[in-house]
Image (cartoon, rainbow, N blue to C red; front, side):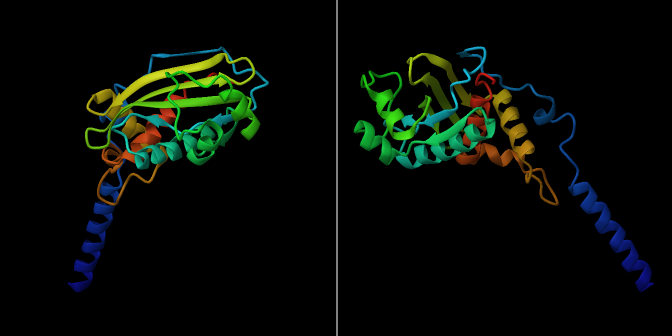
Length: 221
C-alpha cells in the first residue's frame, strides 16, 4: 500500500511540474500581439562604411528624472546598442562629458556648443555620436518612457538616424511587446508561473526593452 501511495505521489508531482513549466498559451498577447511598432523614425538606407566607432552619450532627462534613473537607463541603452553590432560602441560617462562640455548631460534639442562633436571625437576617436533624450518617464506602474535619439556623423554633422517614441505600458501593444522581449531573454518562468509580466514592474528591465526596440530601427550595415 505504501509503495502504491509513493508511486502515485511521484506521478502527481511529475504532472504538476509539467503543467507549471508550460509555455505561454498561444492566445496570450505576448505571442499573438498586437505589438508596438515605433513609427516616428528615419535614417539613411545603410550606415556608411566609415562609421565604425560610435560614442554613446549619457541620457539627458528633465527636472523630474533623477540621475540615478538616468544611470540605469545609460546601462540598459549601452547593453542594447552593443547587441545590435552596428558599430563599436564607446560609452561616454557623465564625468567624461562634464570634462568635455562642462555638463553631465546634453539635450539634443537644445543649442549645442559649436565644437562639441570635435571635442567628443578627440576624446573617443568616434566616427559618430548617439544623443539620447528621455522626454517622459514614469518609474511606477504603468511604466512609461519617452525616448528621442539621434545618430550624428562627427565629420559632416549629418543626422544618420533619428527616433522619437513613447513606450507606455498602459497600452496593450506596448505591454505585449515588453513581455515578448522578456520571453526572448529567457529566465521568465518558475516551476509554477510565467513571470514575463514582471518586466512591467521593473524600470531597469523595461528600459532594456525600450533600448532594444529603439536601436532595432538603426540603419543596417
